[in-house]
Image 1 (tube, rainbow, N blue to C red):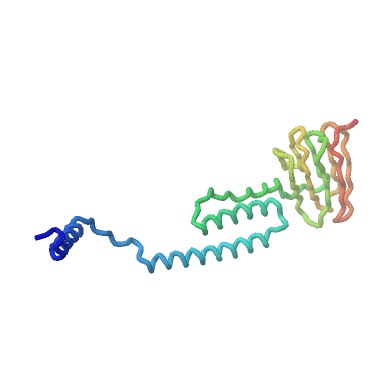
Image 2 (cartoon, rainbow, N blue to C red):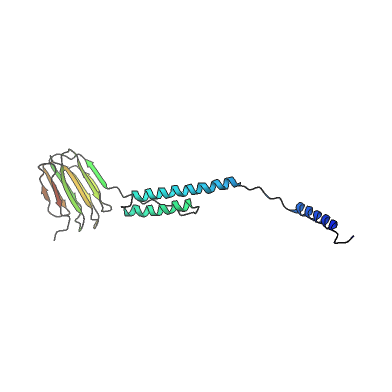
Length: 206
């Protein structure tokens, strides 16, 4: 029988094919069928559109506030990276502004003593009269500035160079407000009605 015999060649081809099929490793089933892959692609597309809409809303809400705008830009980058399937560093929200230091109390009738621990090259002290029976003081700026309520009034304790901005509101029924800054001579204010306002000079005497 010749090696070129067609029948012989066909039989040998069939045996070789069977042998190859027997030795081939089985093909594992796909963990994600075609339907799930198509759904995942569609869902990612929807997420991207939603992220784009959220970015637009956030940007429109805070376009005029520079610190917030910077945070919005960073957040938008993270939202888009997440929608696109990329990892990004977490966004830290901007720190909230520190709450002002304040006190509210009922002063004794008669004379109100307002003492400032030391003069300041900067900052401000404003005294106002109000139609109320309680006094109040609010400090903004001037890190470490304390407000101490005394039996006869209020003391403002501030560090040298703190330059706080202090507003003190006193009932208009108080007879006199005596303001003393450091060791300087006191300034006497005489309330007569609600709504009066005085700006006290905190600078050291020249």
